[in-house]
Length: 370
Image (tube, rainbow, N blue to C red; front, side, top):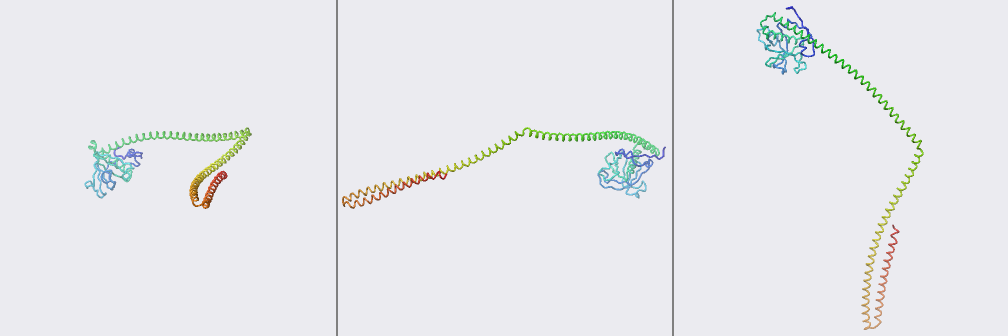
């Protein structure tokens, strides 16, 4: 009935649109249609990018939202307010809680020209009441039919709009219930999948355990067959294995003996090469000594020839002198010269004999030292 107090039950929803249509408190329609006033926080700067909040006393009348510094400044509509917000062609929306404004329970009044006013209430119920009051006031004044209505007709139109909003809310709740039913089905399917997954994991674990057990059994059988085969080979081919081992030992002994013989032959070869080098060195020394002896022999022969020539000259001179002076002196001088020649000849023979002796001694000592 007209004039009766009707209440709209608003429930909390998951999105800001549902929260606009549902709240945890009862909203009085008559309070929405009457003059509304109270404290709100206003973001400084008149835009959504401000950072300073100012607490002001707001008064809503028809399509005008006025605000004062305190309730004492408002004694009537003739008082000059600190600011005025016209609600014609104005939209109201809630601000998400995760915004960068730093406050909760915020809503924005936006005009068609892009200007906006950000307000914040102290509680969610208060925010929803202010938003509904702004919508109702804006509807009553901006609607051409509502401009010619009186207060009672405006209240009736507002009640009709509220009934339509309740109906839309019922439809939204039905859609929400449908979505919840679908979500429950999805949860049931997810639970079934989880059950199947756990079952598959258990089966996989059992298969892995069986595989490990079978692998260990196969490994044990392989080891057992290996030991059995080795024992069988040892029993059947034991004599052959022992004969092969003995033959291997004999071959190893022969190899060692051959290696020792090779080492001794190598050492003998090295000694023979050293003896050969020494004999070559002795032979070279012997040749040098022979050359030296031959040179000395040639020198001695030259000296002998010179002495012989001298003796012949002396003899000739002596003969000439003996003819002139007499025979005895000539013989004495000839005898002396002969004796000297004989002595030189003996020395030459001795030198030759000594050289021959040295040559034979060198030949005899060379093989003895090697």
